[in-house]
Image (cartoon, rainbow, N blue to C red; front, side, top):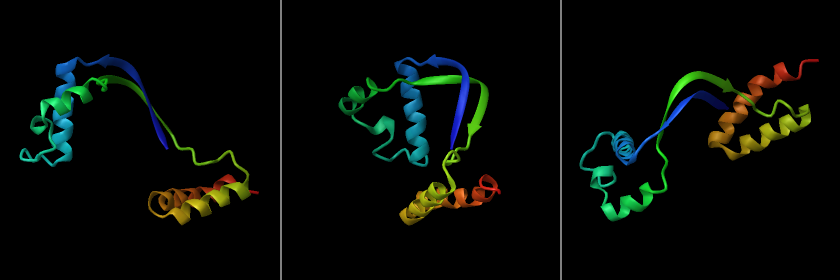
Length: 110
């Protein structure tokens, strides 16, 4: 399950990166400004080395294409074996296995 986005890319400067990190950390901390893990509350000596390893960018989206590929290129026996192994994993694996089961009938029509 993938999404391909095509468009014009714009790389952000350090200020742009800081703005993105501020928004993301606040979002995932449910706007809790008191959280020790939001960007503004992290120590500069912690943030600065990490920021050097991040390339922040924006994409002006021109088109979006989805791809839903769940081993459709396999033979029926392999396909059902994959479903079984994913089901045994539980969690996300079981979710994917359930989706594959729904599609099996369409893939292997006689």
